[in-house]
Length: 229
Ligand SMILES: [Zn+2]
Image (cartoon, rainbow, N blue to C red; front, side, top):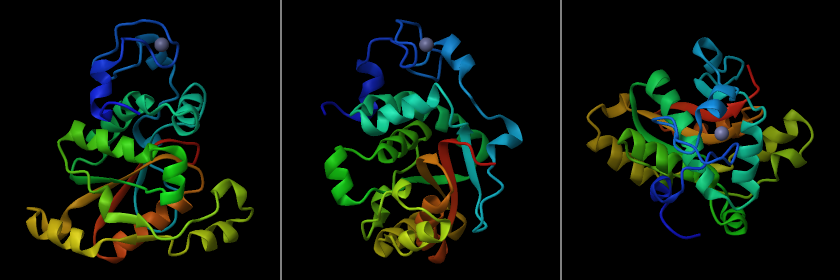
């Protein structure tokens, strides 16, 4: 991997990452042509809030997990194509500007170190980094760690098994959060935006948010795509 993630949008030729045609990208949506943007399964208005999740914290999705967005998210995750995160970040930027106007910092749902070594990058980490840059907010992803390796969610069967698998999988860097809160003008009301690429059941996002919320931090989850309601 070469280059910095936030420099890719400048280095890439103006090719649409969905249709692969050379195009003039739509303002605010690098890497997406006008006709592909119009065809994306975006969520609007009240569709963006995922109301069915437990745990009592708000989660928003920019789009439904359907083609052609689904294919792009799979390429980002499994095809060593970190540059695709630029186009996907633009969907999150729009979502956070509208749904989380009090956002004070951004952080990603972390991967375990071993998974990170296998893949070479955390796709949610790239999204969080570029989202933070676009919104001129700090990226505090270093404050949330994956303490123990969990099975891939797709390899577990029941909901109970998934939840047990995630129990205490995440931990926080208390020193980092205390230092940030004491310097933050909004103090204890400062809201964190927790970023993931895809939400299926919401169990992973909820588990990642739990230690932050237990430490008294306000958290709102955002994902690029989900079919949850
Ligand atoms: Zn296109």
